[in-house]
Amino acid sequence: MSLRDALQPHHPNNARRTRGGHPTGWEPGVRFEENQRRVVTTGPLEGSESEQDWVKIASDMGLEVPEGYTVRLVEAKFDPVAWTRETTDQKLATTKAVWRYRFVIEPSPEMVSVSDAVEVLNTLKRTSRKKTKASGAGALIVNLNDTQIGKDTGGGTEATLERLDNYFSMAQQKVKEAKKHTDELVILLGGDLVEGCFIYPNQVFEIDLDRRQQLRITQAVVLDMLDRLAPEYDRVRVLAVPGNHGEHRINGRRVNRHDNDDQVVAESVAVAAGRDSALSHVSFTIAYDEPYLTADIRGHILGLTHGSVYGKGFTGSPAQKAYGWFKNQAAGRQPIGDASILVGNHYHHEVVVNYGSLLFVQNPAMDGGSPFFAEQFGNEAAPGMATWVMTDQSRFTGYDILREH
Image 1 (cartoon, rainbow, N blue to C red):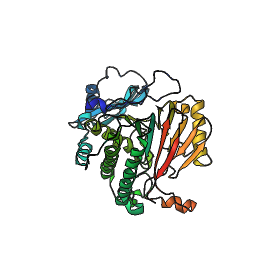
Image 2: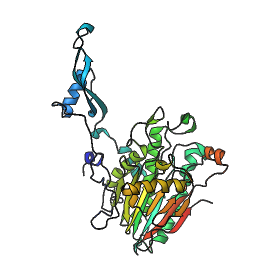
Image 3: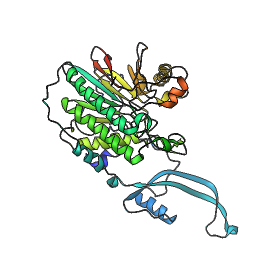
Image 4: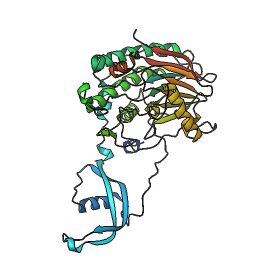
């Protein structure tokens, strides 16, 4: 797969309850499932069907496209009775049909740099270790979520990195124990890996890293985790969904559904891992603009979402909110409605509720704490890293929260 192909937007192929033939999600290398987006336009473009045509239209409007950038048409509207004029003379204005275009000028795929991620991977301190063969028939699940790199609470980024280093060391020990009865590792990237800079008013005064620093360090965190855990298994897959803190926002409003820094991190890590012989066996399934992913793990459909998607519009506890959202998705026959285990985060504390056909699992955060939550509810949620095992016989066993205290 070329770098251009790897960076093209594709939707994941979510696993459904229907058995037989659907992918299990483990193929070596970087993989973005083929399921193209649907684009709706209001009419034909009258010959303007290529980038060269769009560049000319933009040029005719007085916009020069810099070298290394590309023009992407995002909207075309046809107005059959527009009030317009061909000259500056107002008296010559007439009613006629016109096309109105909206473009995005963005870096071409060749300019998208993944060198930072590759450089980070190359500078990681690697220690040779005796590898024992994984046995058994189960999948070890390790959940990484709500690290919110860049948040200055609880000692800031420095304290968060120290905490994550401890979690990863404990996870290495967990792997050593789990390899006796598992033969696969599944890493869930559950969103809010970065803190963001403009998610709420005055956030810029409560961060210790700018956006570029947040992205670079978060890439290093995920690569470090993979470097410590992934070589221990021959079968490794990573599932990545976006969080609300990763959203690109202007004036507090989300720009679109897919411009999310959590996914930028996942994509950069995927490309870097694909270039490394020790990690090239890791497969990645990364949500594009969907708020969730589903995957078949040992015959059970696991649904992964950050949790912000049901944060508003539903009442009750986080588990009740999640279940209300899930029932609507199931009624609408959406892929997530087939899940037998739904994994969410967002609310920064662990909750496990068995609804029978659905098991809801909410995992703790890994950041430095949330003063706002404490001010509102009077208590704080202890950070931790969640792990559990899935087997043919059980969708959820051995749930463990790795904690420093």
